[in-house]
Length: 357
Image (cartoon, rainbow, N blue to C red; front, side):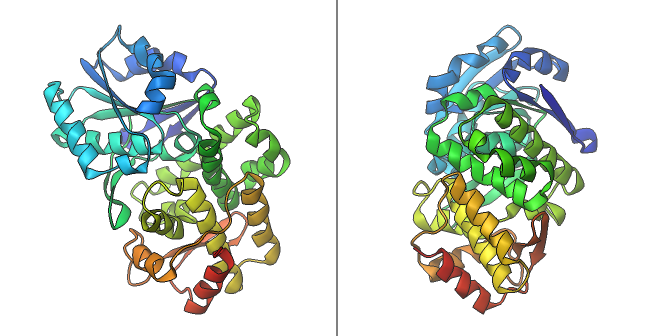
């Protein structure tokens, strides 16, 4: 079992990860206090596969459950409105608790409704996907999508606890697991170190879901995310590097209609796009660009796609990081990401050529 502390003063919390970490949930919850009512928000796939795992909480709180349809389309204002009405109908109060039990979509949506209901109630994250465990559940970003862009409505609302049980990944569909590997590779490329070395030597074991390797990956990604969040909770500077590949990737998701590309698939292409920009501007050498191809392609992620260039540029102009010009996260070498607002149109067009199918 691994425990990482996200140091945020009065908003600090623990992230517990490892095989069968859920067995510790009753004790971990009791340490947080007494909650009269607890609402578990999940999706129908997780409810079918693992819905009973949280019944262990029924002895210490009045336990309710609700679910949404799986997929990015559920991360909407309409879904949030329905959940908020359900919470009101249950008579939930400020001292009650939300449990986000699912992947990144569930975590973002549940965290959002927890942040706005009665101006904020407590919630905990129990991520069930690789993407959720290595990235989305840590850091307090919540949000919903709009038709014209991803995560354009949201809040910063830190969870009180994160429990990442790696045994939940055993039933994750192959495409979802591979999608989550995009965020794992992102951490390796952006921060280097032990995670990059592990991916270099044990990529095959990671893809085959070797228990020990997956456990190491989750713990290393959590530690990296916790350190960045502690340094920049509200994404004003250093935390922005975690969006490597996301400016292009989020635009691709929105343009294609949420659901055609999994998040990690879009981010994989986005990282290749960013690597192409960096190489075309003389910031990144060809060997590091090749490492992007080998790692992302090696786990089965796409490196290119068909898209409309003009439409993607319109979508990323609405990106949250956009100021006077888009701010691109670019690598100068493995482990050294930097924010850039000086990207040339020539570098962008050449990168478009490289990732266009």
